[in-house]
Length: 115
Image 1 (cartoon, rainbow, N blue to C red):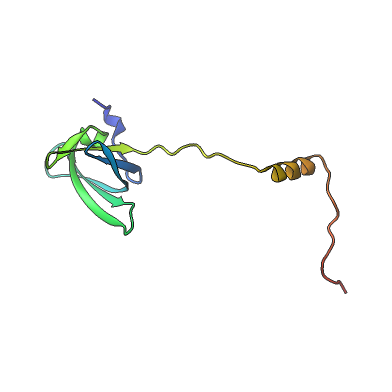
Image 2: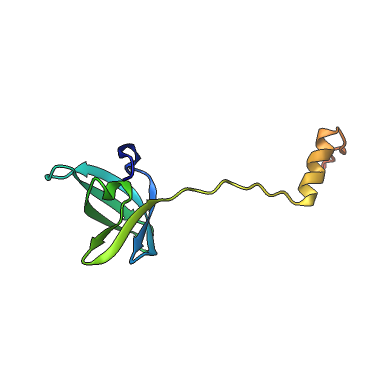
């Protein structure tokens, strides 16, 4: 069982698995309690072209990422963790930055005639 505090949050991007395969990415737009106790209405914005919206009614376990079935098809919702941003610098940029930090550089010359 996944801890209760690990429920999905509005604004999170999730990946929905259909039949144990990645199906689609979606952003959670709204989470509201359902009429049934311990059930929730979760609205998604499906990140596809064209954009689509849908609402599923899920229980507490499904809201924490536990697998479930929908019309006998295995389903699961998993939070997407963004990878760390990698910063790439080409060799020209690196040399220019090193020159600036060491105080090397040239004069600025105007390309336009000054009066």
